[in-house]
Length: 276
Image (cartoon, rainbow, N blue to C red):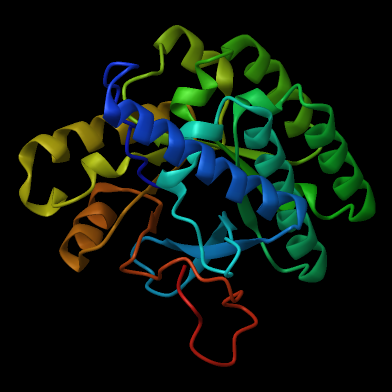
């Protein structure tokens, strides 16, 4: 589940605000670069639970967290828009995958989803990290889920389709994140063969009392069922929404109602975990 990212303002290039934004971006990028060079990164884990079976966890999502010079977590919205199209974005994907594969190797009962951008498919370091991790632990592939956002998948749909077919032969699963955000062309959707469809949170909040969201979510579930995909509702924060989604037929639920992302792996924690 990707987290909301606030778009940067786009004032005139010569305006004082533009200069301030540019300076802020440069400072943020410097912090991110230092953090990556020194490997000040961690995963924060959030549970994805089976609908109607409170507490039964289907898998976890591992969300990358970058720490600043004082060890504080940098909000994703402060740097993701700036680094997404750059090599820094690819390095972040590599480190997230590396940490995820390490977690899978340490616990053979874990199933874990890791986010990636379609831009990382052709990045040599990312591919090397994946292949080496799967080689070290032959059980990891069937327990690894790679999440690609709807927007990212549509950047290069043909490449994504080929990439997915190759890895699905090894047992790796794929989740289409933020589905319903409005990017997917149906003609490409039929080619993707995602295993899991994650319904965008904009349709989930207050669904128990929002007729429009109810109709739209039902349509998204129908699409998923037609293509034999497992469904996950994102950003579930209200028990009434969770109950309604279970009746609607969603397979799994994810959100703060069931747990915030925590840097302490919940399956290892013996004390209250630190949220992140």
